[in-house]
Every structure is written in C-alpha cells, then in structure tokens.
Image 1: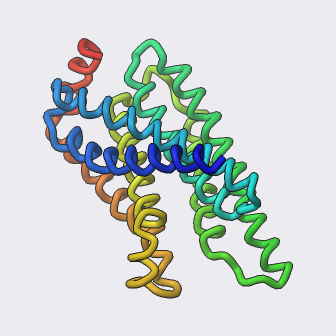
Image 2: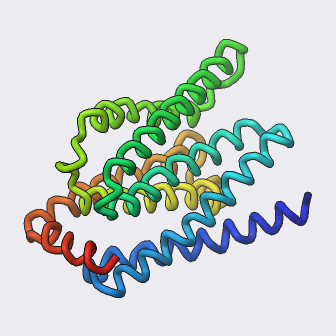
Length: 238
C-alpha cells in the first residue's frame, strides 16, 4: 500500500509540475499553430495524470479516515476534470451535442458534491466544532454550477461558440491546477507567510486572477477577430 501511494504521489507531483509549466506555452503561442496544438495536447495529457492520481489519492484518504482531505482533493479533481475534458471535446464539430450533454452531467455532479461540502460544514458547527472555512468556500463555489446548468439547458448546439468554450475550459483547468499547487504543494510556505485567515487566500486568489484573465482574453480575441479565423484552422488540423 505504501509503495502504491508513493508511486501515485510521484506521478501526481511530477506531472503537476510539468503541467504548470506547459500551461503557459499554448497561451502565448500562435493560436491554431503546430506549437500551440502540440504543447496544448501535452498539457492536457499530463493534467489527466494529475486528475486521475488525485482521484486515487482521494480514495486512499477515505480508506484511512481522512475525510476532509479526501473531500478537498476529490473536489479539486472534479472541478479540474470538468473543464479539461469539455475544453477539448467541444473542438470536435460532430460531437458538440454530446459534449454539451456531458458537461451538463458534470455540472450536476459538481453541484451535488458542493451541497455535500456545505452539509459537512454545517454539521461541524452543529456538533460544536470550529467552522471549517474551506468547506463553505468550496461549497459556495460549487453552487455556481446552478447557473451553468440553467445556461446549458438553454444552449443550442449550433449556436455554441466552440473556440471560446475551448479557451475558457483549458484556462479554467489551469486555474484549478495553480490553486492545488499553492494549497497543497506550497503548504509550508503558505502556513509560514500567510497565517490564520490569510491562509484562505491561496484557495481563492488563482480563481479571482484567472477569472479576470479569462474575461480579458475572450474580449481581446474577439476584438482582434481571431476566434472566428482560428476556428477553421482547428477544424482542419485537429
């Protein structure tokens, strides 16, 4: 068991580090170009290793009774897998309808998971324990899936902006990756320099900064007229 866990940790940490570096290459390389596509595929490959290993490690935490850690790690794996899968699946023109349906299922699962996190948080308070802020932070974050579910139910496949969804999906997966890094990988540094309530900052900062970055990026490519132009490039080369 110990050997298996160490092996999972090795693949999880090493693939996570590689993903954090690879994330920036397709961001700055020419959209639709060979470099963009190859580095993007490499990023997705290593991110799936991260997601799968995180899921297995989360199950390990359940087995040994570390339920809170299992919840956090499992939730991060879930919210990373969702945009990671959808961001690539939506590029296939003949799979738009099934991609939207798959994302809808993902969003429902995220919503149910977030409700579970909130329930655990309130249960702790009712039991007289100190409130775990992160349970409410992530539980509240997951509730935003309600908006996504409502939007997806009204989204017509033929009107889907596939390139925008691709960009938002992959960038969102990167936000989740950096959140996990600052919270788990840089835990010692965070604990030393961000004591007390400030320790919550690494959990929310990547999302806030990344959200602003995604909003700016979408507007930038729309303004430049590159999203529509690059759509043809992706269709012919993917």
